[in-house]
Length: 337
Image (cartoon, rainbow, N blue to C red; front, side, top):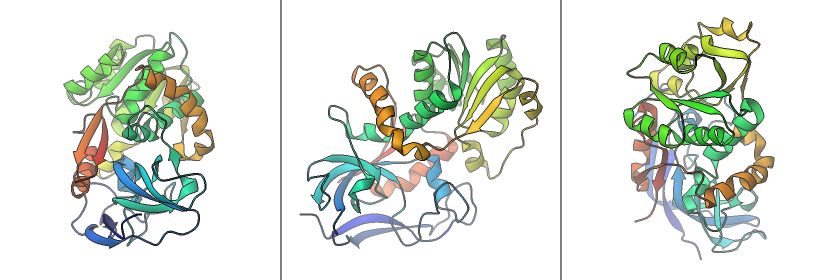
């Protein structure tokens, strides 16, 4: 049977600003919160891992987004993975490993139909990166929009992050020549180790000038996780019929405001397709995505570096790690005593 109380972080107030670090009082830690009584169709999940994503910061704001704002007074929204401890949902039994929107809490009562079973033979937390949001996002963006072909040049921004590192590997596997953009020498080394031909350190190198040298025949695909000045620097180097995958805008969350695109005109004469997408819109295709990714993971052909933060109480620290770019790989919170 499940516990009657749990520990959790509640979204107690909206942040004063829509970007940047969190104000004190936005999140409230509760160490003896009641666990709701289980209803038909629900399960109780003992949460083992939480996913921290740039979107987490956006969900706290009371602004228009692809999901409604995270509700005040409830456990902060987050993807998680754990083990079912009690079930009144016919498709799941105690002991099943699952993932879904479980929230910043150690015990979650959720609708069983919203959960996905974690495949056998992979670590539980893989459902939160290479087989979850990171892998699904990279696969969908490349498969549907980027469509890299053998011999083409692909540039991936935030290439050392959770989504970017998987996009690098998938583009390499498609036969493309990949150039990463990242913010530290260590991240650039990681990107090269994943098969990229080279990596630009945007903190120490001029992105526009370096891309001109590395891609003299121009860039066919940009998989962009950053936006702002980094994306703008790439636009003059796009090939005719290039594709720009708009996946994220981490620059906006960290520095407090948008940066205009001054080089947008290059999209027109080069007949460029620039398109944004949200991976959650494609939930009906997650089985299709997993069918492609899972064999690669099991064969060791696809990997994701993990940046692990221990303990629920430390979860807020992970938000700042994401915003300032000091993470090395996917930011995860490991729960448990």
